[in-house]
Length: 117
Image (cartoon, rainbow, N blue to C red; front, side, top):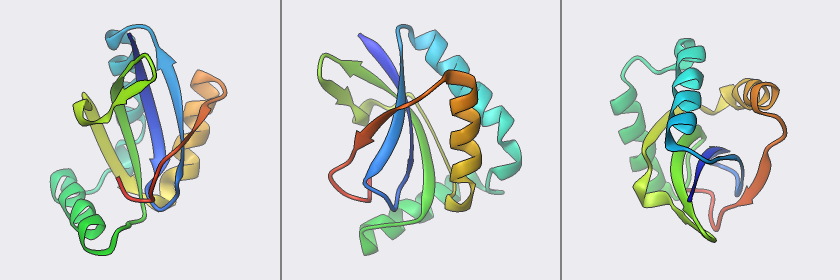
């Protein structure tokens, strides 16, 4: 089993991911990302995430950056079992993605069925 760190702009059908062999490595990197981008966090993260999810339910899309850690078991990504998740305003996507790419190397691309999660 592998663990996947995924970043996507929710208004796009394309995302990017990196695979890791251990949950600990993946969670550590996720925590580093969250710490690095503390300045981008909304004042009330839970409220922000609820509002973005509501926006998705009502309109089918939103403009936000979503980063999550999921299990990846032989051709199946268990998205419902996200270990950690963080959302940021969409305008921060390039900065976060470029920083992750500098730290982790080139990401693999991932296609989503829709723009909303």
